[in-house]
Length: 253
Ligand code: NDP
Ligand code: 8X3
Image (cartoon, rainbow, N blue to C red; front, top):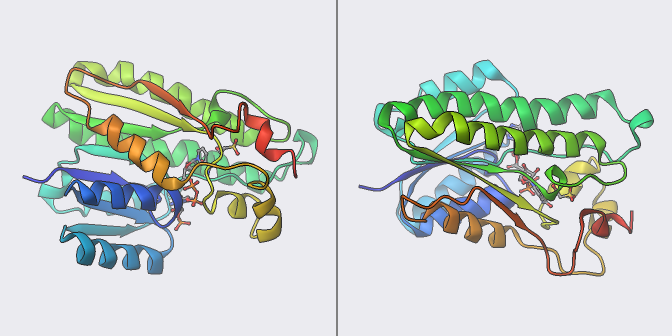
């Protein structure tokens, strides 16, 4: 029987690359995101290219009611989620603390922390009833270090780091693995979103060195998800070879 993976934020970047990587392993895939057109396109492409079953759930992870409704509407056999990839997340702005936008801060906190919690609470309860499952949290090097003007984004990813450790302790008695991967700079839509659509500014983030690709992260997540039952990767930091520490990539901004 095919395993099932649920990937939040699969409409671009790392989430989309994960969907393709797990499709290669013949998983049944649940993809989520706010952009319905991208979600439907990805579903059609995965079904066509890999002959697998895919369910697309269109919701905003910040909306607890929508998260609950969409997950509870899944057919019963699709609730047997083997792997949850908590990927949906974003950065908004790059400003010193006294100049930061409250709206940006709330968006990051609501998405990166509260959204991750809403999804994890429901899916972990299903995993507990089956005494198996694997939650893989997408943290960041920004959850291990802080950099100038990264303040609130770094705080949200430090929270993901803490939740990853806490979930692992709470869920261990129930046979559930919990892992985190913490990437450095990966060239995705991340910087375009951070700079509110300013493509030119976003491109500068990746100038003068070779960033990671979304597929590098997806391949590593597949590695984490496919270890034998007695092996868990607790925490994995993955950086571009040319980015020794977190602030390196923002020197052009
Ligand atoms: P992208 O912007 O390419 O992808 C982000 C994904 O998250 C999109 O699918 C987006 O979908 C989804 N998302 C964002 N907000 C919401 C929301 N409120 N509700 C539902 N889905 C949402 O960036 P990445 O692929 O780079 O980012 C993925 C994760 O990786 C994030 O958690 C990010 O913090 C983390 N990360 C990224 C790094 C990088 O350098 N790129 C490095 C370290 C970590 P949609 O807009 O359709 O809702
Ligand atoms: C994304 C990596 O260093 O831009 O989480 O914050 S960084």
